Image (cartoon, rainbow, N blue to C red; front, side, top):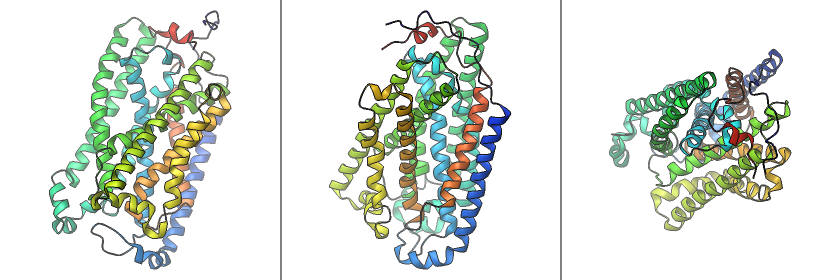
Length: 428
């Protein structure tokens, strides 16, 4: 205990986002954009044969029997990645808010990492607004007034599921998230300069407000952005399930970022005990995600109610079993892999093992969102090609650039945080 108490740390340590590092990230950004362009052209050229091959597999709510075109796959890929990276960005703010409200001390030394994540929210906001305005008809059946007019279920939901109200909710939620993030970030930086308890107490109060907004808004965006892709389908657990996938993805991103910075010689004040706690978070909430996945699946599959079971039929049986292997792989990569891999104490304290676990979970939950979105939009015409990997590479590169730039704007250590000493001496 207290093995780090006599270590002198540089409390003013900063991360420099060097021109060389920027060049590498921008290079990957352009590689992603090039892959995206190649994949899009390929998809457009192949759209005729693709349409013929899958016409018989069209199973949509209000779209007749025709297979979705290349536009549907394009917009679905953009929508999936925008939702995924919005979640990671938002979880950074959520992580900080939880630490404040819980009066947690262990996490102070890693605080500046998730604290930077909210800076990416404007990017995903723009992508989502543009994607919806251009491709909303391809993603959401309820945006077609002729479909709604002949569908009693959609008529009943039209007071909530309509384009103006949908856009109002999206703008409102992104606006609240970003404003609160900016305010919390400002409090943190002022605390560095002035010290004292003023900004710490302000952060606790603002975090409590944010957590209420977060709880309401993340459930609603799960219904809006993902569940309403299949507007006849519903699950009372879906808001929690959606959040759980976001939460694990965010935790994996925080862990991986901390480890990569340590590899570069930064964050010497982050010890094995902090890493152990991050590993426990990934392990525990992978189990939490599995609990929600299992509860949702078993209850719906056993009840076999047509409006509910269609979600799992699309992923297990329809479209010639197009998603069947991915459906079961989703459980393996997001439950069995982290459960067995991170079970031991040693696994949570070794950087290479934590990196493998974090990367595996990020891949797994990206696939989880793929499974949530693609069957309802693209039916059996989705795949994994230049378009999908190019979009992911572009988003990931943009995220790394924006977050690295934000991290470099302040010290890596919240040096005047009232619980700093507790975190520096953290030992479990």
